[in-house]
Image (cartoon, rainbow, N blue to C red; front, side):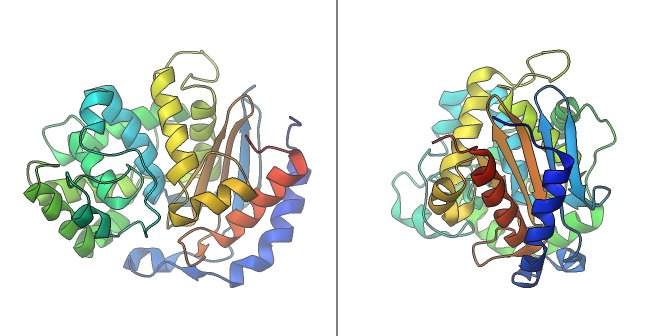
Length: 309
């Protein structure tokens, strides 16, 4: 596979820039409404530790649902596969990420996968820690190791805004608690989950997260195993089957890169043998995916033949 150059990324992000006017900036989380459409960026972190980028590289954003992949890795390391998948399934849902419908129709009432909100809440509930801040602190430690950057934290304003408006997530959590999928305080779970979603990065930091996943969970410089190989593979498989909400099937056909999106407008990709790819553009399509990000990734995958299929 051909390496990406900075000039390529500049060309592709300029081509995608007009798309920023087509989508809608997320408004159901009040703090996210402040994001600016023009803050678009792309970065590729190759496995040889060479990183290139284009756009507003200094802009930071919250990773939102991208955190579901990292929380899953940590929960699997904490509890093991059998424990986690006894409580969360492995199948795509085909429903919106906040849907409760499948919980009501499934017996036992466990979420279909860890990438929808119900599954992500159940996963966060499994992370070891006696307090919400301890859980989030352990997740941040994992991210610090993956990015080799101790400065990453979470946006308190966004976390508070999400916590105060998390009515659907509270409903999902209480439903799962009734059926024994999760345990403990729902308010503490929502505290941890909203802080997890509000973890803040720039585009190059996010691309490095993708690169570690692409590198089978190993650090790019030292080769140290941060996430066990099998667990990194599980995470990437979920990215393929469920990572782009209910657009995952069409994304697999059009782009073919294991990827996870968030409603902030961020998307991270992890391509084995190649590296991590991150795109940001806060205007979203009707499925909740960045319109600029989708366009850049489709162009990149086509020009460089990156599809894993």
